Length: 289
Image (cartoon, rainbow, N blue to C red):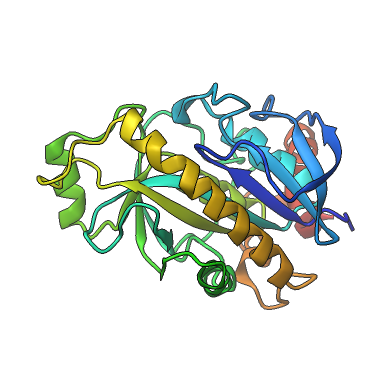
């Protein structure tokens, strides 16, 4: 088993990890192409951690340009089984103020242009996504964030939009009527793929703005977001260190994330192509071998 079982994927404003004692930087090749950046392997308090900048160093990649499959496949191939996701989001409710953290537990999908499954081309699987984040990580993340000094809200619904444009006012009000708590452009795609890869996944949604529904606040802009990102990044660094300290050596034995594929593969075994099996072996080998 890998010594690097904890992964961190940094979003807008978090392109490197303070507190991470770097051991090496590794380029990972995948059947799905290149990840966003080389993976940074290191330690936090003696625990092995793998870090990836979601948008690449210098924020080169839009949400719809990200190679989500390569990013998650790379984490899996390095031995990561628990993934801490950090994401800048807009708030859809007054109580979620800029600089607050929402540890979301549900998603609504409004994406259109991205590959969001490892399967197909010779092997079909249907995983359960009723509860799309790890039930063991959500309370742990919330407690760690609170103890690190953040204002934190446990639970909430993240609406994942396509982007890169921000919402229209009509869309923002529609999403509020659906019960969305925060809005972002990346995390549901990651959650889908993490579940297929049997990786425990949860999100720290870092609030930067009120989207455009709030009539008494200036409409969201890159300038206004950047003003909050730096403070959020400092908070996130402290929260990650606290999470890493608290994570048990292994995922709980009864965790549904770790067994997501046991009853999900539907293709008859004698009809699975050799190419599909080799491509997906890091994901399905536990079930098929």
